[in-house]
Length: 368
Ligand SMILES: Cc1cc2nc3c(=O)[nH]c(=O)nc-3n(C[C@H](O)[C@H](O)[C@H](O)COP(=O)(O)OP(=O)(O)OC[C@H]3O[C@@H](n4cnc5c(N)ncnc54)[C@H](O)[C@@H]3O)c2cc1C
Image 1 (cartoon, rainbow, N blue to C red):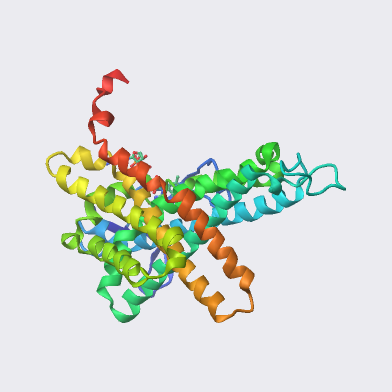
Image 2 (tube, rainbow, N blue to C red):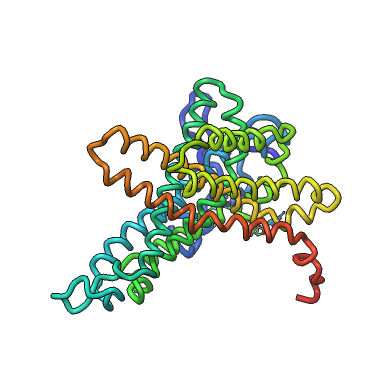
């Protein structure tokens, strides 16, 4: 594939716009969401284009834009979940429905606010611990990019390259799930346009599809990125987790709630990588049937690492004395939730990966 630049007007020798190039919009697409963005069919009927870069090197050239765009779309997954969560939180404090099982918390009112109910709390904690962990993950990714671009740090560049499909795929999948959870907090109102939550649900859906559908991100991760440069970037990632655990092994306050779960999750990730190494060469289906689970397993380990680091920083701030102890205490509580309630998913993903490809592939296509 080659890349071309096709201007709307053919440029005259003096640099001013000349004849109209027949590059035209054929149709504005009717979409499920993102209505503020006019996606269209473009027609190039006899239009003139100029080769950009080398012939047959278009894919590689386009990836300069694609990699940046994938990080941007990962950010979209997080941002959509964040705004949905913020709305859900306001609603959960405002809407009166039912009574707390442990006794009325708003006795003078006709009912208690939704936020008193454990299942609503569970959902809000799911969302809060995801968005804050994901924010740290995105910020870490951005710092690695800065290091790669501003100081030529090749190791940082390698880790970003490895993590790009994880940032895109995991954050948009989980971002969508969290947006749906936020919509659910509204009950029936979540389904009514006036409240705005259905728009978030529709808008969040595209991030899982464009800039390469998430299944293709998983394929990129397992098929290309794991083995890139002899697997040195994934080894560097494991080393980063290992050294964090080692540096903090004496920290009893972090151990049970943060370090032990991170260690277990990281072991699951290594076991999955090992499974691919042992089985993927002789049977590529074995690796690719587990690629989606691997992308999620990796995403959880990244967020687990972010939460363990955040917990360490929060503990240090509280020990040093801070003007805002509530903020850091909330970080510790929220991080503990992620480690206890989200991170155990790594074991499920590993079991699915280790079940191999037979269970996935053995039904012949015509039997579906
Ligand atoms: C609103 C919107 C805006 C867009 N904007 C742009 C734009 O500005 N520029 C642009 O170039 N494109 C744009 N696109 C296109 C978009 O990037 C693609 O639709 C997207 O990358 C998915 O590719 P596809 O539609 O060809 O799906 P396909 O590649 O056909 O994929 C279909 C399904 O099959 C899976 N799949 C495909 N191949 C494999 C494989 N080898 N192994 C496993 N699973 C596989 C995918 O995960 C997916 O679930 C836009 C699309 C939309 C909907």
